[in-house]
Amino acid sequence: MARDFQEFKYLTFDVVGTLIDFEGGIKTCLAEIAAETGTSIDGEEALRLYRQARYSEDADLFPDDLSRVYMIIAPALGLPAEDRYARRLRDSVANWNAFDDSAAALAELGKTHRLVAMTNARRWALDHFEKKLGSPFFATFTADDTGTEKPDPAFFEQVFEFVAGKGASKNDILHVAQSQYHDIGISRKLGLTNCWIERRHAQNGYGGTIEPENFTQPDYHFTSMAAFASAVKERLTERQ
Image 1 (cartoon, one colour):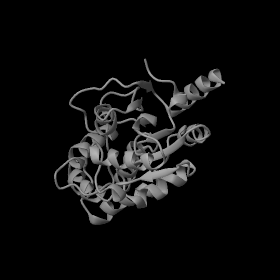
Image 2 (cartoon, rainbow, N blue to C red; image 1 turned 90 degrees about the vertical axis):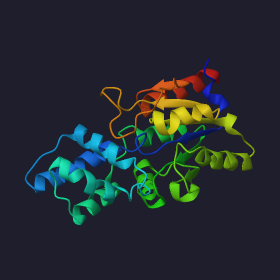
Image 3 (tube, one colour; image 1 turned 45 degrees about the vertical axis):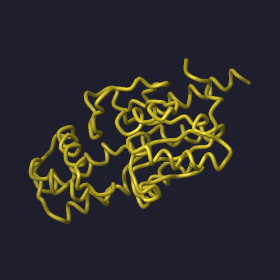
């Protein structure tokens, strides 16, 4: 059985895809470029191409890598492969929206737990994301801080060291994320309790996120942050 929410001191969160709508941000920017250049795109096809281009050996840190990705996928989408549009896709990150339920859910969860961001994005991008989310985090870890990206266990180990410095352990952490590949699978291997936020529950496939070799059954499963926050609040209220 899954543990009671009150047993956790820390809730660690993936950010891009779980709290921030990166798929919507990418599709919106590419659609705007398409409209300006006299064409149109299929959003899901754009995400498929993005996924293929993003996860390569010569990839840069996210979201700087969006410039490189754009130059690869533009021809297949009928878009001009020009540096100005590549930079535009990268810079669009500053305008990406949080999911409608993210900020309110984090505000509620922050009343009872310490919230920690764990993102493969660089610090400059997280600075924008935090503003969209209401700056709810007790601590934040980016690719710049860790020198690596999830699902590298080394990323998680740095978070474990941080909470250990606060007198806690990984047993005090509930890891919350939408990516089976980057978060749910590796968190299980590392012995963390996890919560899958299935953002694409009404859509087929994995969208812009790489597909895992194997599906990991999570300890908790919700289709929105709102549902997760509501379940935590309800359970803790019952315990009072």
